[in-house]
Image (cartoon, rainbow, N blue to C red; front, side):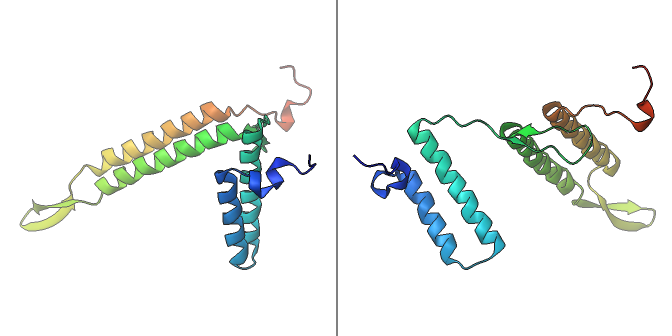
Length: 158
């Protein structure tokens, strides 16, 4: 019997652990820079997470530091991931709205013919604003920022 942990023995690593190890070695061979060091560190964390899963080790979700903005609290990785998904959804939607501002049609304006937007730009801007407000509300629903105390609140009854 050996005292070497399973995760440290290559002959007992899963294919996923070996793949991450291979990625770490490839990044290490790419040279040296702060970005590559960070990449290796993140890959090592991923390998540890896979090993914890294989070994049945329960991982406690890390609470990420709150934004450096008053009223924002530390957030779980799950909440941050969810809001990041919403941000990607928002970006996809806004790009579709932006694309609607590009097509033009020929229109007669008096005696002249000119290219004009194919869609009503005012309503596109209203839609864009409402989409942004909706996603902001959705993100606030997840992060739940609180109201803050102000310096002038000292000594006042609440």
